[in-house]
Length: 176
Ligand code: APR
Picture 1: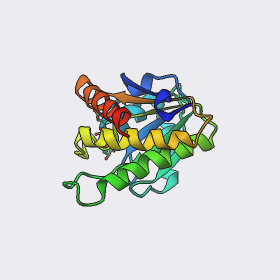
Picture 2 (picture 1 turned 45 degrees about the vertical axis):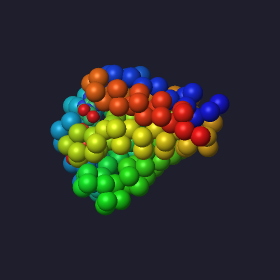
Picture 3 (picture 1 turned 90 degrees about the vertical axis):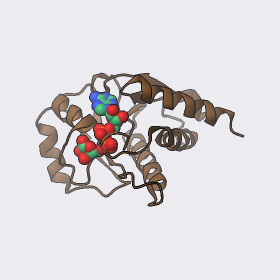
Picture 4 (picture 1 turned 30 degrees about the horizontal axis):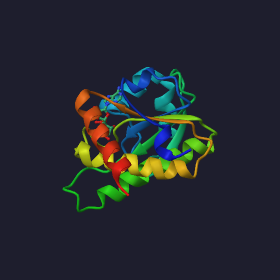
């Protein structure tokens, strides 16, 4: 099955979803924070903070695994997106590395379903149109090599983010 066919775009709170893996947009200290990171820590409960502290941080573009604790999801993959600096600091490559390392780590746990937030598109300031293109191109290419992965949800927190993802998905489907 082609990568596109397993990608879904939804507007939702990622902490409510019934998936094997929820991806978190974390910081390099894995110290918790605001945005989706704060929401995931609140929903997963205090054991998540303890588990994150034991990991000793995570460089930008890489991913780390914890249990999902009080989430419905069995696992949380914490990935650290780049801070937007105008686009000339390797942000696109680092963002692609986040999606690729996260989906590979999820697949290594035999996950069939993964939910991604719009990594770097909040506090870290990455323009959502550009980020959506990187996210969808990276995930659809990765899915070609992950036949057991059944569903990848791109969870949009708001209709503006959803519209950006829809435009990016249409563009990707039309590209040769
Ligand atoms: N469900 C899904 N998406 C959410 C949720 C939620 N509950 N809450 C926020 N979002 C969305 C935001 O609207 C944005 O589109 O997640 C996207 C990523 O925004 P941030 O959470 O701000 O993440 P990021 O830009 O990667 O910044 C990471 O923020 O909270 C800190 O500790 C985190 O320092 C790190 C930085």
